[in-house]
Length: 135
Image (tube, rainbow, N blue to C red; front, side, top):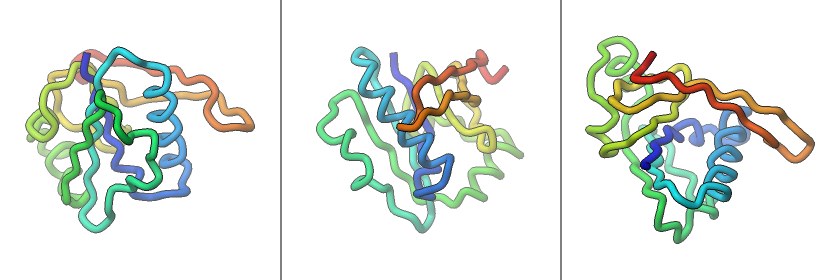
């Protein structure tokens, strides 16, 4: 199975969402040894924070797709016009995980909400709520 994750919020380091996303992806890749991952990153001015994501190095199951598009354009295309499926940008995926505020059209199962129990060392346990085909 191929899982796509929008990691664009990593452009804003040291924020709650970026910290959660970083820990989520790191723990997911550490524990899941059978699925493939496509990480999608888009920012007009900010570079992909590769130095902060050492756990991605040499992982043959992970592809990173980087685009230089402003968030306002993606908001217009995805949230208002509902055009340009994510698969056109990153290839086919079975599941796509994104934030609540940017929802690209997709044929994949979608996860847009995540809850986690927080501990002293960060995210300990997460629960994902999946909707099928955008439901």
